[in-house]
Image 1: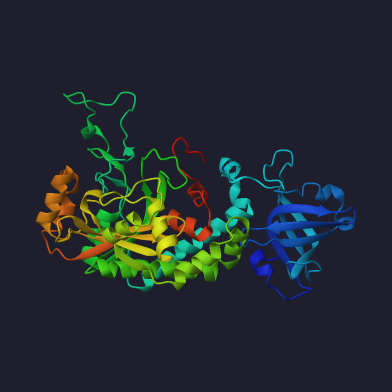
Image 2 (image 1 turned 135 degrees about the vertical axis):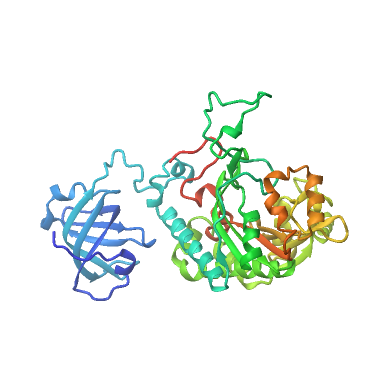
Length: 465
């Protein structure tokens, strides 16, 4: 086979140098035709669109073409010609074909038919080859790049926080333990408890639930940082909205108050959605057609509207006076559920909402306490369809107030002594927030289940692949 430089299919579909010879490589999506002419739809993952390969059967022979079936990987040399069919402007008239890898039609599971998302989760090693997951994972890449670009262009520093930690940033206790001790026969102390002093780190350690506490340390030296990495929650929540392993983006900024924090969160989200609309147009249009016809309108809805800002107290009053029957009753002091958040966004304001000043009892220990003694400077950004997409706050900068709150919640101070100490040495006002990357991906793809926006989901009883 003649050696030609490979052209990605996304690029080949834009070429106009008809009559020239090109090489494309990829996986066969479909093959059809008659005894004289064959048509192969080829895709290499670079675009939602396939390129059509036209094969003159007489030039190749059936023996060579027999392994060119759905799922097979091939290399094609051929002449670029104008397409005679609808849907694309170019196709390739094959002159040479090499089969890299065959796919037995009797056992290859991605034949040309509709497959449920549930079935595709069972074959996560192959589902990226489908149109749906090719689109989602390309978009996941573009959003990752956009996040780094946004913060880099605004003078933030990418700060790497530890995945193994001895502290619990949320105080929730739902953490995965990390240990090298013999699970069958761990060493024990005089009280009969596991002796972690003999473990690898000499103490009990876990996978991180958040990089926030360490991120604050970075902000108090570098001014403005962001983290972007995996986090882990050992919550036994088998729902379409929860993962045990997910990615978080957590900016932390010195000298930002709650209002600066809200401004950044709104600007950040609008930037990401604009970026998706500009750089992922074909994939968004495909997903809208297949799964959520309101997707593009909802993305534009966020970009085109200023976010409403109101306090938790005002929000609860609106919910109480709405006359709406909620599954979960709402009153001052309760943590709002997705149905409450979506009512405020979709029914009442018809705009994204930022709620602030939550009751201190339902928020984390590190949030700045308001003068009323009842609320803290928390903020949640609420979106249509999914509810909360960002959670954040101005952080408590006063050492005595922070210590009092730690004692109230019954937290152990020993694992976070270093965090508390920053309030002794040059403390400053600072704020930050967390954006769950998969929550963002749910919103911009229109998918309904969080397992479908990450390549290999980790959920209760599921660590396959």
